[in-house]
Every structure is written in C-alpha cells, then in structure tokens.
Image 1 (cartoon, rainbow, N blue to C red):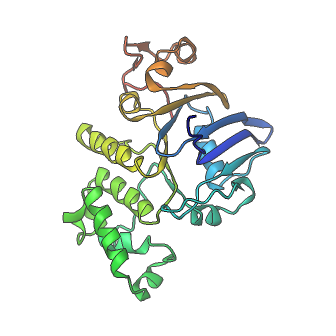
Image 2 (cartoon, rainbow, N blue to C red; image 1 turned 120 degrees about the horizontal axis):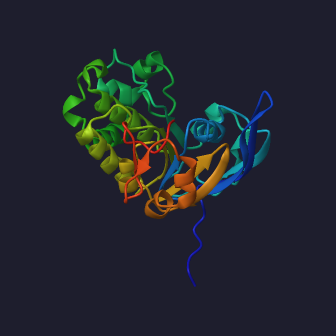
Image 3 (tube, helix red, strand yellow; image 1 turned 180 degrees about the horizontal axis):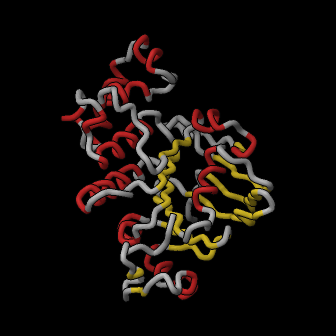
Length: 278
C-alpha cells in the first residue's frame, strides 16, 4: 500500500471578486511537500491574486485554503488551518513566507544584519540590535549564507550586491524563519543566464526540505525547475501537470495564440522568449 502524502496546502474552490470583476473563479489545486509548483499564465490570469490569498493579503469571496504544514520542520504539525480566516502576520508566523518580484532588503545594513533581523521575533532594526543571537541561530545563518552563495559577502552592505544576489539574500531571509512553504513571485526577473541558473539550483535544493510555489514567465526556467505547472487563464485553471506535458498542451498553445510561435519544445518564440506575462 502506497503512503498517502498530505499536501502542505489545499486550495478549495477559491473565488475572488474585485468591483464586480471575478479575478478568480473556483480555483482548486494542491501544493505538495518537497515540490516546486509553478503558476503561469497571461496578464490578468489571477496568479498573483492567488498568492495574495495564500499569504492573507487579499480575502476571497468564497472558498478555503487549508494549511497543513507546521513551523516545526522536524515535527510537522497537521493543524488544518483555514488561512483565509487568518491575519497576514499570523500566516507568516505559521510558516508561509513570501518573496515579491522586487527584492526587499535593508540596503543600508550588511548581509549578515539582514539575516539577523529576519530571525523570528525580530521585527525591527532596533529589536534586532537589542537581541542577543544564540550560537544555534548564528550557525543557521552561516549555513544559509553558504547555501545562497553569500558567505563571502556577509559583512558587505546589501546595497553593493548585484540584483541576483539581492534576490538570493531575500530568499535567505525567508529561509532563516524556517518556513514550510515559500511563495516566490518572478524570482529570476532581470537576471542574466548565470544568475538564473544559480537561482534554479537554489530553488531545487530548497524543495528538498520545503514546498515552493513560483510565479514566473521564463519558460526555459519553468521547464528546468518545475515539478508541477498550473496554467491559469481568466481566473481559472486551464490545465495542470508536469512541465513537458503542460507546455506542449494544445489548450495552452491556443490561449497564447497571436502572442508568438511555439518551438517544438513547447516554448513560445517571442522577442522576450516568454510564454506569458505577469
């Protein structure tokens, strides 16, 4: 008998209405542990709105999002929390971390100080300065900095990091909080090839311990990194599956008809080499 794997979150019939416009309509899917789950689709498909619902920034008109993952990585709790009824800060405290497209780091602080201020309970620069970090916390920061390739930069101000390094630092700032689920919004936007490949490696390594949700429109990146791809269109799920099957799906090609041509690999040929917009 195969073991039943509990999802980290279950999205159940989520609908969202903005001024009479249905941004999401009966969206249902699951985010599984130790998987990288991509959401793709054209502008206005509802991808970012769905992330807003998961992290509590926006409340749905109907539906539930049941969160099973606990903040204790070693002893996961299955608490069946409906995050649609929770405050944004409480959701973050329970282990759902979100990174927006533009890096949000304290550029006047060093890389190490950015990591230190991200520790649980350290909500301000002042509280971080007054907080005495434990040896275990120091070791965790050191491990994460090595993981994100920033150990040699730990004493430098974040302002002097490259765009990609700032993105990695923000991912590290989420990891130090020991999340169960990371939500990453366009993590490779503005990166060159080398940084994009490194980011893909980081995300794949993260998935060995956590679940990762990514909104992205670099299709080469999606193909290389994704375990599961959900295509959204006009607020609904068009199709879902592995990257190869989804990107070669005729329904997906029809949605983007007129935006460019598809290579045999299933990747659309446009000036930006993208399948879809944000």
